Length: 342
Image (tube, rainbow, N blue to C red; front, side, top):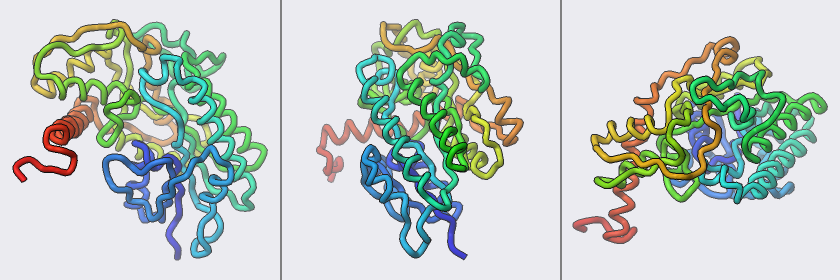
């Protein structure tokens, strides 16, 4: 009996690289595809293809397997997107690229898959950014249940593209009889995620700022009372795997219900690090006032609960990012390929 096969698009990124590891642990034969290899560890994929998924011919090529495994994959995981944290998504400076690049990838993927006589089961990663900004004005009581997505009014072009692509995947599912699963991610974080360079998200940014500082101040964008929930990467991967094993075709949230203000998130990281440093709120992109996952639907269909508290997940994430900061400092001091005292 042949192993099950999976194609992970965006396998060089944070969530995609973790999904590759999980699928390999389950015995899958995995091909990863991205513009780049994973940054922080070697890929565990059986094959890793560097390809630009905005190119239709490249998408068609990577979707086909060798004769050993037949012509198509059993499962496809579509994580590939042009994305980043608030500093990338909410400034408006990257809107055209975000919408064009991500939409083109999804159009290409679905067009190619629709031509298969036996198409694979598909997972598409959407985002909590699709929820209407009017539902998220109160930082203490945001409305993010799945049925609150319409009337649509996301607060960013990133959210609009994700909402369009949700409809795209569901349209292809109806018209081409595709087996599609869709989840809206709520701020996934953890080790081996982007932690510098402008595309990092709030948990990683806070960890980096605290790890780099021994005195002075830590800057927090906005008033700091805006709220979010954050889900640890292992819990995210488990939820996606359960969804793919299920008969659930409804779009579901995958997130934590442990809501926290951004100032309190920063204070949590300071406490984890054992540092006493002042917080300073400064002008900057902050997105909606409040956002928190509503997990009623995923409990109903998948019996899933997140297992990592925010404190536990942030502790693991801080330790990893602090080690990255230390390594970066050492490289700057001794040279990238030179070890101290060597």
